[in-house]
Length: 97
Image (cartoon, rainbow, N blue to C red; front, side, top):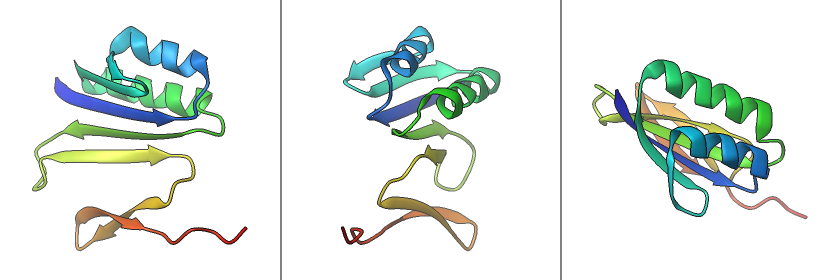
């Protein structure tokens, strides 16, 4: 079991309802819980199936140097990047409209 945090933006109510089955919504769009790897992977499958045009960040505790791992779904100006084996986030400039 590992602590899991899921942050959603602009996702359909159906996904929010699915997340609420397994996790506690502590703020609008912010879910936390202590789940197994199998449940975490199932939750990520639900994100990929139901998030549509929204975006999602999911982070969980693990035995890495940073103490956690994360993955993202959808477009966002914050983009995961690998730097010598360390996962970081780079902030992209705004797109020209």
